[in-house]
Length: 238
Ligand code: PRP
Image (tube, rainbow, N blue to C red; front, top):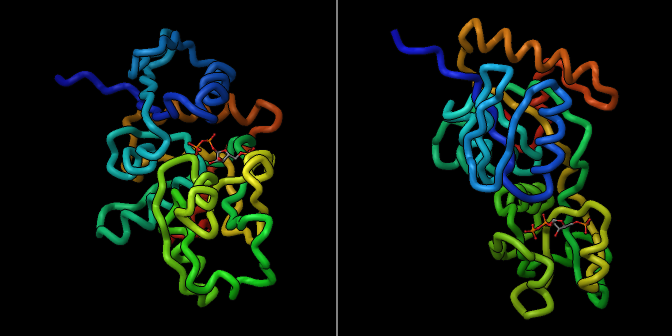
């Protein structure tokens, strides 16, 4: 008989969410020994494999069922969901809850010398972003016709090198915008980190393991892992 596969949890390998995700799993009582190059880390005290991948891959891995659980930002989740719906790919998941960190917003920003009064000022502009689907939806909703310039990182550089007139990117403290002489003018969405689950049924053992983790997380002050399905509140959700 095939051995029951471990519960697979995808987290960001490196970047803003990586350390805090590792710490969260540790606080949930999951013993893991992380090393730089090991991409699948098996817990020494639970039947759990933690899969370390790029943040942008986590939503699809969960939606396809390659992993059972993913920890990711709402911004990435909504962007990938819209992208997958457009391509007629599976885009379903269950939201297990918000984890109380990674709060930020996806905002449109313009150079400080841009005479912005309202969204109509963006008509005909080029807007650089790593979130083309969410931006497209927002512009459509506000009847703004602009060119979307896709960039995968360091989006704030685009206006200063003549690539775009404005940007749409994540803002947390606002320090990156200020350092690059940009000012936030419109908020596309608010975001924080959440835990999502594949729609498929877990084995009894993995369901029990997940339930134990959620109980531990609920016991940690500041975490709000319940079992609500917030999917309908998110941009890009059905
Ligand atoms: C994110 C985001 C902004 C910055 C905002 O970048 O894309 O550039 O953080 O944070 P702040 O408002 O606190 O300055 P990240 O460091 O994740 O790298 P990226 O440019 O590759 O997206």
